[in-house]
Structures are given as C-alpha cells and as structure tokens.
Image (cartoon, rainbow, N blue to C red; front, top):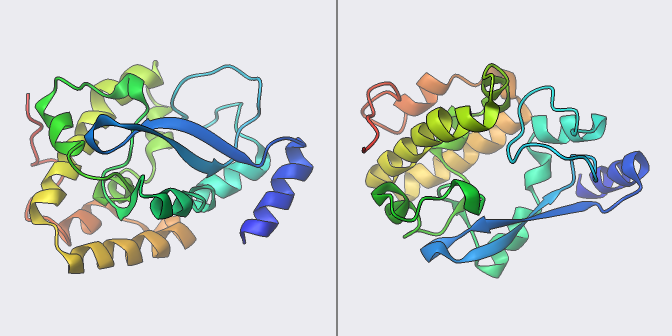
Length: 199
C-alpha cells in the first residue's frame, strides 16, 4: 500500500514523497512527525486543513480520506517519539504550556490515534463551516479534543487501547459508517456534549 501511494505521489507532484512537520511531544519536547505528502509544495496556507483546501492534491485527498498518509508515523513510534494510542501531537503554535490541560496531555507520549481522533474524524468538513478555520480550530475543536483525550486517559485500559486501534483501522477503511456519539459511548460513561472542558 505504501509503495503504491509513494509512486502515485511522485507521479502527481514530482516532489518529496514524505512530509515532515515539527510537533510537540512528551514533556513538551519537539520532534518531527512524518506523513505521506498530500499537499502541494510552495503554496501558502493555514496551519490546519479544512475541506476544499486548494493545497490538497487529488491523490492526497484519497490518502487523507482513508488515513493512509498517517502510516509513516509508525517510524515515529519505533523511534520513541510517539505511541500507537495517545493524544494527537499538535504544532507548537497551538500548544499553551501554561494551560493545566496541556500539562496533563504533555505528560504522556502522543499517539497515532486516540478517542478524539475518531470522534473528530470529519474535522476537515467541520472546519470548512467556520469563516476563520484556524480560529474555529483553536477556540472550538481543539478544546473539545483536549477534553476528550483527558477523559479517555482517566478511563484508559489495555483493552480499551486495543479496541481503539481496531476501530481506527476499521473506520479508516470505511469512514462513512462512523458514528462519533456511538463510538464515544463505548469508551466513556458520558457523551462528548456532557464532557466539560477545564477553564
């Protein structure tokens, strides 16, 4: 799968197959996250991607839909930068080191997937509804993701991590069948709407 994706990216863009970006890891230590390239080079844009972003290539849209672009992060796992399950690592611009929520998040190794990843599986579509997607992400989406990640961490078990990995693979292959509320109810005693963020 990776070989086919790499060839398709090269044919489409004739540029670097891999994309590297600085993210904040455990204890606030930055590292370079690796993904398959899904966006055109040399085109300026926001730090986050919303649906319809002109930077995303045709091949990239397919890779992003089925999360194939995330597979190279297994190298980050082998290097010890990340784990399979854990809060998604953010770019430094969105991390508030003074926020108690972030201090709790950064106490753990970031992961390829976690509960907030599944609940916000249609994040790009949601962001496209904001007049300012970056502001919408920082003020609405990110606080919800932080709250979900912290709530999951307080109920986390080896069994729940295993199930979360299975569901991530399942819904990466068939994303249209994912129901965020139903997924959340399998792991937490409260729904996403009931989980309150810490001021």
